[in-house]
Length: 583
Image (cartoon, rainbow, N blue to C red; front, side, top):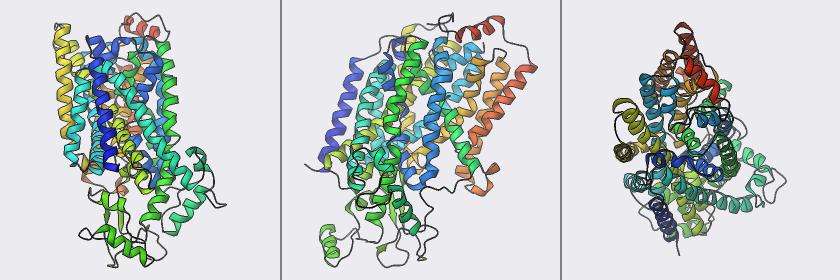
């Protein structure tokens, strides 16, 4: 059975499983829809949180960025893992002790202000829709690359699947669907990594292969990779061209952005208590580590395999019979362009520009010693999906990886849709504009909001192919969360003097400049030399986070303190069991 069969088999099987779980776990109340009834077991919640957390950026894009940025790609590993630890230890238990449904819910009640709640909703929507753009691009890449489906058609199929289990099941259905998606994605990520590690290093454990020697040599795998890339004119794999300040700011923006991400925070509202929130955070770290410790090895193996199969290969034109032409090239001692490259070329995610007209594919860096120009441009988002093909692994492994990539993208998209749905139905309607609506009306509004959000996410996905790499798009969402939501959450928990005026000013100070900076330097002026203080759009959220914190504190000190009951509430939520607002 060929690759196409296995791909369809795994994709159809997993999609059917997700829909079945959603129908079985259909939400019957707003409590079920928003927070899964507050009774999810910590281990189950940890696994669901890991799936929610490990999006298309983690599964598809992170290893690709590490493959081509080398040490520079470590900012994503350090920022995302460090940020989760920050969230788990610093914020999650206290937010659960507060006992609300959403981040805007916390902001609205903590800062005793409908205006603050509405601004928090706007911030959550900005973050969520930016994040969804990255997920939808991942869905489009997977469908177009393997199922020979148009990019936008693939997004429509993915949106339809999410529609079923997000609209019917709500958070309850999403939680148990994400457990299944975690199992699929972690299995899909590690199985090919084990195969490829055995081929390249002889180690069955990819983490050991990454730090061990290349098979048949006395050189470490990283030394081998350094030699290969520098001989072709690229920066050494263990070095980076990023400035120290940019590395620091990107890492910090990802860390603090994690601590402000609404779709991750909302997962800690689904357990019974602050103690359960701590346990689920610990389990989530274990489950996340299973993928994140493998990613550097996957990236390094992908770079070696890509260079080995593509560089100096003879190109075969589309009109030629591939098998016949490849055999003729091999008969003369040449190396034909690999079949996997021709498959991905149809998606426009890899491109060959024969600049010297010799028909040979030169893959070169800016400092190539032979003076040849680079002729091969790969999109970094394809490498986790293409890696099994490049390494010529069995067809069933390739199909499994596609299902894993879709599981990663859809699990996070579902979590984001819940944030959007609850922000509209609960925070804007029930808690702000129509407080008299019944629970039945609120459930209807929640489902309609989720449905509209799915449609909007699909429309965003239609433009996602024009966006940067998935991980970069997601990094923008983290920057927005770091600058707008983290300051008010942090100060709201740890400084009882923080008031509504300070919160409102802090959120606006963080959101508007960060969004403007990202938009300007990504869509208007892409000159890196014009960046402020050398800080990229991926890292600017950290700088504006500090500005938001300072503005919030200053405004709070210049305006009346919050009511006494709010100050007492802040004291109470830091002592588990004492808060009087738990639900």
